[in-house]
Length: 323
Image (cartoon, rainbow, N blue to C red):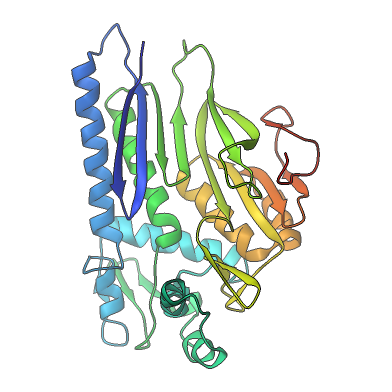
C-alpha cells in the first residue's frame, strides 16, 4: 500500500504527515479526512500559542505588570512544564527569555547581534521563577512590565503531539508526523519495519545523513546550529541561547533526543544545546524519560543512555563534512 502524504505550512514552518491506510477497515478517503483533521488541530494550536500576533497566550504578555490573565488548562500545563525544565537546567532553558529573544529576532533580520547594553537592559526581565501561576484560578501573571514569555521552542512540538493524539483517537495505526524536525511516530503491529529517520550531519550542506535511527513508537527532536544562524565578526550566531548568560554557545553543533512525546524531546534537545556539551551530557544522562546523542562542534559523538542498536552511525565516534 502507498502512504498518504500531506504537507502544509504551520507556525511559519513545514509540517508533513505520512500515513498508511489499514486496508481492512480504512479507505483512502477516510485517511485523507483524518489528516485534514490533524492539520486543523495544528492550526488550532498555533492560534492558541503564537506570540507573533494576538492570541490567548499573548494576552499574558500584553498584561505583564498589569493583571493576572485567566488561561486554558492547556496553556497553564505547558507553562508549568516549561518551568520544570527551567528548574532542571538551572535556568539555561527559560521561556521568560522572550524579553531578550525579541532582540535576537531583530538580529536575525539585520545580521548584527544585539549590543551588550541592550542585552543587559532586557536580561533583568528574564526570570522564570517570577512567573506566577494560580492553578485554582487558572491564571498566569508576569509581575513586571517588560517581562515576556514565549513557547517557540516547544509550541511546534506540542502541535505535533496534539495531531498525533487526534490521529490515534481516530484509530490510525501507522503514521509519522514531522513538524519542522520535531517528529512523532506510531507503527502498526504488522508493519514490515519501524520508521527510519536520518540524522542530519551538521557539517554538510546536503541531505546526506550521518546516521540512521529506527523507531517504532515515540518522538524524536533535533536542535542544531546549522539552520537558523547568521555570521558577524567571524562568529556564528545560531538561534538557541543560554538564557543564563544570553550568549550563544559554540561547543555543540546538534542534539538529537528520543522521548515519549515531541514536547519532551524538543524541550530536552533545546536545553542541551543551551547547556553545552559537558553540562548537556550530564543533563541527558540523568533523564529517565529520554535518551539521545550530542554532536560537538569538533565532531565528537556523545551518546547518552541510548541503546547502541537504536542509531546506526555512518562513521564511528566522530562526524565531519566527509562523513
